[in-house]
Length: 205
Image (cartoon, rainbow, N blue to C red; front, side, top):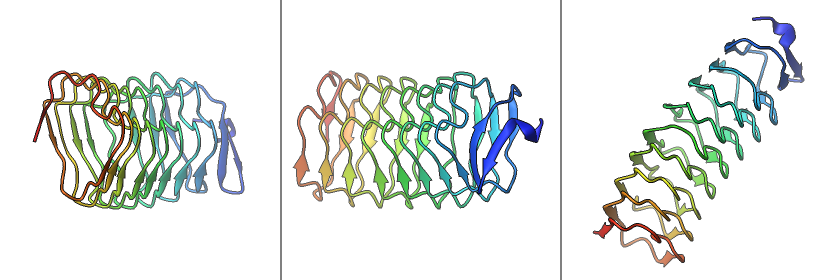
């Protein structure tokens, strides 16, 4: 890997222009910039523990991306950061993560997602159309299940809403056709429209 393939300005990796399939990002980088790797051919990326934010669309359209090693002090994954990374089968979130942006993981290949309790905000459509997703463990610090967050996750079987949640947004689980069980705590006082629209297999608990 040639470091000249990376444009780094004041700690921001602005653009990767190389053609390596494995990329190890240097520890001078603090932020992965907007669309820095978008539509590239990378298959594996290793982030150093200096990175605290992954910017808008940073890995959007990286269809060949199979593995990403996230940094331990990471606090934010911005909107559409990994949208359409269809071959990304697994991701391990650090326990420093606070915010996941909208459509951050739309149409990714995950089968299982564990969201640590450090996460207080997951924006709308964050995991929509992850059509291999079967299992989700939600942060116990969430107050809201955002609109469309798991819409179209057709293999998702069950979900337990944490006691911290007070509202569930519109279409949050729309067209989760394999969903058979949802546990909603008494803390939830506001449920939006069409939350379970198209969930033909659902048996609410």
